[in-house]
Image (cartoon, rainbow, N blue to C red; front, side, top):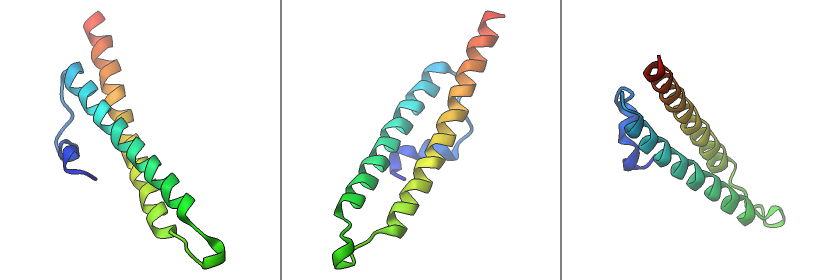
Amino acid sequence: MTSTLNFLQNPLPETISELEAQIALLDEERKNCADTIRELMAREDPQKGVFFPAEIHALRQQRNILESHRQFRAARVNRLRFESQG
């Protein structure tokens, strides 16, 4: 993961704006993972024996981890909005 995602090591923020900013960064990183997966799959050439299974698998795992972090933050945003209404 990139250095811009250092915030993943910290507790979740308590403000909607901070959470939404983190969600935007996570979305961008997930998009980068998906783009790289597509690029690697396009570069594979079975006739020449060129494959990238480990790299693709690692990127898929990273993308799933990022999605989990995103879901936690989205749930926190929803909880904060619900609490502010009550």
